[in-house]
Length: 614
Ligand code: ADP
View 1: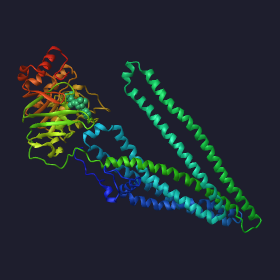
View 2: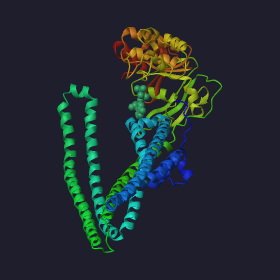
View 3: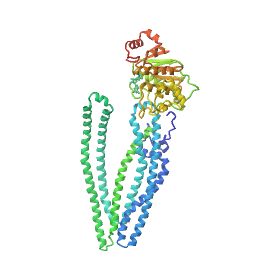
View 4: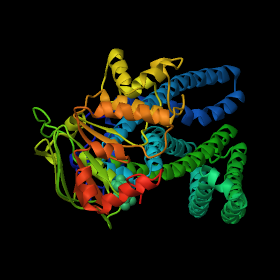
């Protein structure tokens, strides 16, 4: 993930001359539609072929009612005429079928290509964001954007466009043909239908707003259920099942009372639409019947039975067309919403800017903090580091100790430049960290954390996560990390799958794999967070031995929890509430009778306490 391809979608607003707010979001909804179109540009050839085919497939459908009427009238004249009409009809349908095949294929293909590209772009935009962004954004929300928002936008580009064109075409084409068949009948129809349509649309909007409220209530209930289910152990141990059911029941009850209202209104809507639709059809039929009767009386005003049939079928087509187009409007608006969220992501520049900066000849592996102040972006109110200064010399080991919450892990995160400081400098090998290419220096630094995270892939892939390596190299580092023996005891050895779909490793085993993963990049600086959770003594010994070996000859900053580590450290730094309260060697600090001495004494008197407990 370190070498990201350049983002393709960038500053498109400027390119298409769309006005944007200061924060880069488009000012108007239309702007989003324009941008969607720009994004879909590579699909234009496919979409054009699709649209061309669409003209033929819709055309054949539009004229269908005409032929039904012609068949009825021909059947009343001669069989030869009937056959001719049917053959032409078959030909038209054949072409229409072929065209609709091409249309469906092209639109689907364009959509798939579009969404695949969009997803890659969005993921690229997400993964390059600074860590602070991930602190503040729920992962669920991001996966949602990746999975469903992209889908909604894809639909707008393909299905919706094709439907919009198709039904608009159908409405206009049918109306023209109807007009040609009988101008009078069309006039009657146009007098009744729009009034009905407007009424139905308004009512539909009202229903929709209720549905939205219903969805919100339901989401609320879901959150409650989810919390209970994912914390089932806590629920069970406090016998909280009834409470959980009660809470969920109350929320479901709320959504149900809304649902009951919707049910009634929905019924009224259906009934009303039926009454009005039949009313309109009856009007047309009655007037058409009159014209048909006039025809039998040899009046020049009249129409044939075939024409009336065609006309009624056209009416249905027009009604259907309107229904679909109004539904499409809603979907387009949804797509606009989704695309605004996506564009926000695509446009977001990471606040910690990492790449393209200076790479040194070599990293002299010293680390220095110079009056560093830091506040997490997710918690702007509280300063976590308040003027921290220290220096870790090349090849030496420095231990960080102090009460939990003091800021030790934060210091480690800052050395990896997961965040930028608010004030003060971090110096890496003589250069300010903000002037260095972070991809470059992260390759020289390795972290082994307390509870290492392994990916759900093979052990080998986990070890080589930071660097491609041959199996010999993998085995070599695994041996150094005391992991080789247990790995070889698995049936699939280095190909054994770990994580969700594979084997569950013990804490100590995970740690040793994480140490191997750190060692394979042959880091110059090692950042360690010693495990506090109790490993069994055999495992603890093996992990400790592996860590000691890994530290050898490297510059090491360790969040130390055990006495044996601090005793060997060149420098012990005691941090409390974001301030360095003491620093010196173990002996110095012991002699000083301060915070450190208290921590050490506490550890000596209590077996489980560690140097970092409060
Ligand atoms: P230590 O490693 O000494 O236990 P940390 O560096 O983890 O301390 O935490 C220092 C302070 O920063 C704590 O108050 C903690 O709540 C806060 N903190 C840690 N990580 C974050 C984060 N990602 N976002 C906001 N606050 C954080």
